[in-house]
Length: 257
Image 1 (spheres, helix red, strand yellow):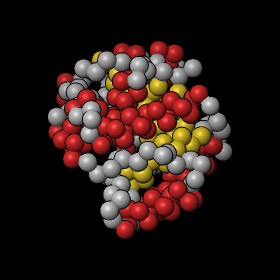
Image 2 (cartoon, one colour):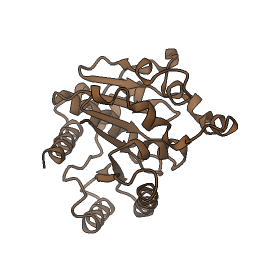
Image 3 (tube, rainbow, N blue to C red):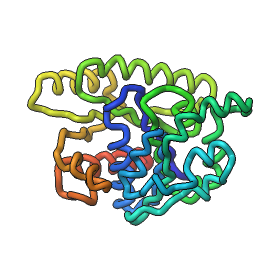
Image 4 (cartoon, rainbow, N blue to C red):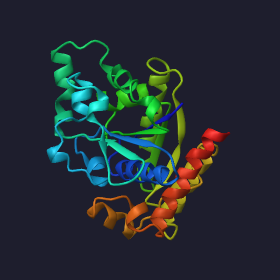
């Protein structure tokens, strides 16, 4: 069975989309078939794997509103083994649309839509928006696990507390089998006192659940975003690329234990 991973943290700017793009690409490089689903209205995951979302007529919005099957919304990317379901600004109006039309079970729409395509992939990765609203709840209700990026800066632990509370609520209701895939330290700079303090605190509190891999501040990652391609393809020997390959191997190892 495929593994479905939601990448979530209600705090913006922690590396969710960057991680969604590059973890998906690294897994596909390692011969896994991967579907990246962009649940963020900004649509940056689609752009980040070379898809022009401005011309995409069938997106995750159409799948969640029942206008199209999810299988009809899947686009191939220039990268072997990696497909994407793009998102765009229409997602910003999804919640109001669902409530105004009294759609039943609005938090289970993604889980239902996913059922038809799930057997076709080894991994399905959700890029969640920077909030804990309807879209993130749908993602966690449909996922097997949650990967939590933790930026090595002030207020990081407040964001961790909030996402853990949301995960607990989902486990107590919509998805009792939801697990934590792991905490991922992002934008880590070992030369700064703050970076090392946050990293030490996360590893102390969540020793068994923190990935050994950490994502450094790396110019190649930023440059790859401007080129609309994963860093694993743009500059495969960079420290940023190596970090995401290490993360992908850890994710695969989780399945083999």
